[in-house]
Structure formats: C-alpha cells, structure tokens
Image (cartoon, rainbow, N blue to C red; front, side, top):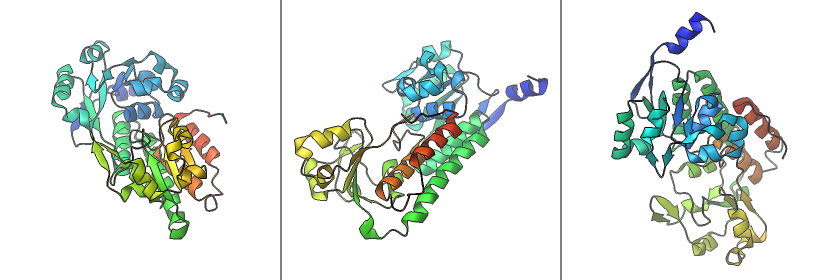
Length: 320
C-alpha cells in the first residue's frame, strides 16, 4: 500500500447520519460493530464484512451471509433483547457503531453507547426513501459512496420498471392481496414499508382497507376479517407460514387457499421486503412477476436474482 493510500485511510472526515447528527471519524473504520440487521447486511454488501467482528444475532445466523462473508461465523453478538453489551464492544477495539433510531431514542441504551466514546451512526429505514438514505449514510461512513449509490440506483430502477408497466394494467386485472407479516394474522398498516413496496405493484392490499388491532406497535387482523376480504392471493414473509395457512382447516374456505395461491416471499440475506431487508427491490420485482406474469414475461426473475447477488455481494448464487 502506498504512503498516499495510508494517509487517505487515516485521514479524519465527518459524515451526517440519518437523523442529522454530524459524526467525526478518525479514518476508514477497520473494526465495525453493527447493532442493526440492515446495517450488517449493508456492511457486508459494501465489502467490509471481514472488518465486522461484532453484530446482532439475525445477521450472524444467516446462512447466505455466512457463505458470502465466512468471517461472520467468528463475529460476536453484542446486542440482545435491545440491549448493547458495552463492555464487550469496548474490549474489541471497535472504531464505529451502527445503531437504529429506536436504540438512540432509548435513554439508557444511548447513555451506554455514549459512555464507550466510540463514534456511532444512527440509521433509519421505515420507508423506501429512508432506505435510500440509510444506504448512502453507511456508504459515506465506510468511504464506499459509489457502491452505495449503485445500490440506490438499482432500487429506484426496480420501482420505475414496475410502476411504468403497472400503470397500464386495468383495475379489474389487479388481484386482492393479503400480506402476512411474521405471523399469519399480523399484517401491514398504511404507511408501513411493507404497504409501500407492495403498493408499487398496484395490487389491492386488503389490510389497508380495514380496522386493525394494535398490540405493542404491531398490527393484527382476525381470520374472520380475512374471510370478509377473501383475497385472491396471500404472501407470507415468514418461513413456514404459507404451509400453515394451506394446511390449517380454519383457512380452507378462503379463495386463495382453495386455489393454491399462497406464497412465501423469498428469503436471501434477509426476508425480502421486511423492514430491515436490503432486498426490497427484489421483493418488488418478484411480486410484480407473480401477480402479472403476462406483463412481465420478459423479466427472468431467476436471472435477476443471480445478477443482484453477483453485482452487490460478489457472490454466485446456484439454481438451488
């Protein structure tokens, strides 16, 4: 490495995080802690997975992420049940912490983080626009702005490709859809990221029409209400929920179940389209292809998936 390159890596710089805080960094971080799954996925995406000795359980457990970044198997989980293990982080010589906004708003956790003296970057991603910003902020922090911009452009292009075709699809050809989130009866609410990305496809998202039950910041419906909606298609973001719905007798009378139109949203480095997922553009393309195959027949979704992981994670995905 040349003297110029060393100086560039060690030169201090300042970035602005997702909530407008200015964060001073002494140089490109060499030891990174991601206390948030979106940040963990993005750090690996930007080629810094080997510099991430600390993360959260969901990132460490992911089999595809482990295949992409084998050193992840050695990473230490430093946040559980919303609480940071500040002593462990300090002992690891961490240069930067990525945390989510709700952790920053938790007074006791914020105090623990600030007592470490480690620079921390707050990211938020409750909407697609906020996800663009989160990619950009993490890219700025790691001096990988051009890679982050590539991801943002792909994301925006996926939205544009779908919206341009969907606008010409007659309303009568747009099915009614129910989105199961984590649990069979948990679903979307207006303004959620799930409702937003599904909305790009122009489908009728039935849960946005009804009264939902709020429990600990999560929204639920009832099976009786789903029967009133009687959706044409059901998509599930949690592994196994699709099989439960197809096999449980209580759901058998629904049109989507009778006709076998119950699908699991694919899972890659995360559950596509989940709030903490970096793969929302893939979720949009997959759903559009599923809903309107006659309008998206020229898009080879399997090839799209392979190109995505090769381009953004430098990883060859097999057919299996």
